[in-house]
Image (cartoon, rainbow, N blue to C red; front, top):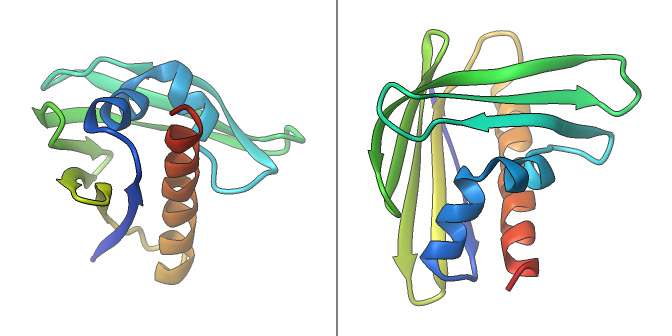
Length: 135
């Protein structure tokens, strides 16, 4: 089951791409709600390279690592990755209104599809706000 979320970021592709792949930026935008944060992020942006983001509840009650391996990279256009037995694709599509960032990922079976979609969309919305605020 594939789930897709997307947003338009009103910024040049170079800034959008950089914010998506830079650990210090990831720690600022990678959250679905105000009561969570990303405390650590690593990126080895190459095919076969690993990534990891440590996501934690701010009250310390729960945390997990979102980690995987890059499987395809086309700078300023595409990132494909695997995480566990699932896969994700991030497309960067430059247009007149900015850059559409579209994320498609394999859903999991523990949580309802709509909950997964809302969480990933919230993160992507935070990403757009982060990039646009840095213009």
